[in-house]
Length: 481
Image (cartoon, rainbow, N blue to C red; front, top):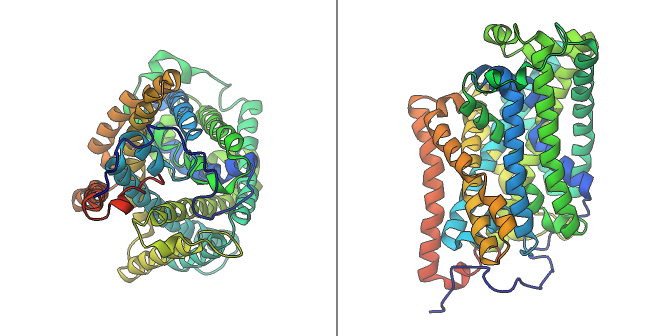
């Protein structure tokens, strides 16, 4: 049997710079940033995420918690970018963890990432269905239709965009995200120049506010804001000059998320006033964001935000679909999954078969939910599962990047990669304990979802061990090695 050194990547980096899987694209820094930022769905985050983080987290101190999480992710990004410059293959977390911690842990991470991003894709279809139904009924005076009908129509559109070259999806997301950013920035400026409810205050930045409520839960929500930031690496073969585009886009995404959401959270608090915001959220946190937009930008913006909630969710599901398809593509390229899924389209040079597979699984899940008459709000449970998986992956990636870089005597980026680990491990423990808050899943649902994460992750390790014994040739490829 051929011996495979499991401490992969300890030698000289490969000089083969050809595409490992046949994917091609021409995304620049802006398009790559917008592709990833679309996954963060600014309008969805503003209307749904920030109010909950304030209510359940550390209240007025949430903007500082977001900034702290941004610094942690920036530190980890520094290590990931330094590591990516020595790895000439795509693969995202799957490739990074394999290079640092070996093939068994790497394949576990690949399985976990695949599950997490698929859950994000699937869950967001519920958001899209609800949002589109609201647009049709409230703005167009149209008929009310079951949410899953709209979700299936959205799935058809995503399937087409996911089938063709990534450049088309990137252009769509640039347009949709641009509209979102205009609204959010306009709202921020309106609150700032109108002086909020009682003058612009800085209560959020005092020690009493920062350490009020539950800072730990605020950090949990804050870390979840950065979901998908590593996708800059997984699109390696589909960008211009990856050695320049990926670092710039990665740090650009982290900076944009930190500034945008910390600033918006601070001004959202001021829109109601530091003394009143907690009371407002306690009464109705669901519509508080829309109400604030209406108050500061007028009725037109109030209607526009309803439309943008739909377009934001659509851009999110498109970005999640594309990321999931590329994780599937990379696992298939290593023959962990059927090799046919790693075939690039002859014309579009896209992972069309992997994309079709994600679409089929998504539609199958939606049909199952429709048949069982499930409420659309079930999406929160699956998004919670994704958030939990993401925190778990970040902790493993932090350790993997440290090990990889330290072995190569790249000590400064190694230390930066390791700095977030204690906070990430603490956040993972908290996420396990507070999974009900994260997902709304209680009882049997909680057990099923948590078991699926750890079970699917463990399955990756089992598959790797079996391949090491029975198919060392495939085992050697794990992690796009």
